[in-house]
Image 1 (cartoon, each protein chain N blue to C red):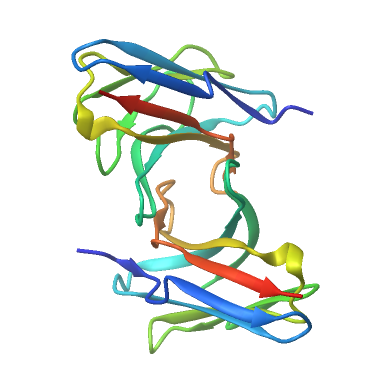
Image 2: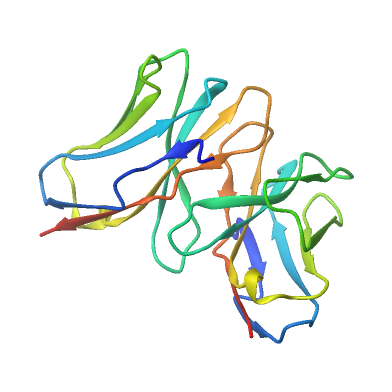
Amino acid sequence: NAGVTQTPKFQVLKTGQSMTLQCAQDMNHNSMYWYRQDPGMGLRLIYYSASEGTTDKGEVPNGYNVSRLNKREFSLRLESAAPSQTSVYFCASSIRYQPQHFGDGTRLSIL
Amino acid sequence: DQQVKQNSPSLSVQEGRISILNCDYTNSMFDYFLWYKKYPAEGPTFLISISSIKDKNEDGRFTVFLNKSAKHLSLHIVPSQPGDSAVYFCAARVASNYKLTFGKGTLLTVNP
């Protein structure tokens, strides 16, 4: 039972490079989310998808785009990476308003 | 403006004693609260939740108390075990809204 799988686990980018973080869930959940966690901070919502075919901005969407590819997959894209986007990124999923299940994160460093 | 506040960055407790983690919120529209536990290099895992229609919810060693008038909730762990050592996040949401607002977390260390 994999739950929420994020790839890659680690990545180093140079400023200006682009990258897509992948997330897939096998729990048949409708809703999916992307968060970032910075040192000394809680998790901040970047984007979420309440259901397949819909996406909405969260608290910190600038510099990111998302794609809800199908019910299982929700990707996060950085078009032109900036050092301020160095963070740990978590993907989560849930059934409507039920508690969210998280992946183990992608640790992204931008030089 | 931080809507969910965990004012203690860290807490150290002896094994077998009670751990009390606190959380305050400012948004009176929040009506559902959750606690997540996070180990290093892993994602947060859901621990326990409480709806605003209740003032207490219990699950084994974990109890969450909600004081709506004070906009305060707390997580009690009794008895504390070394395996409980982790970062604990408080989170809240408004009714009919998927979005969670998280506190900054409290690092709990349970000493053997």
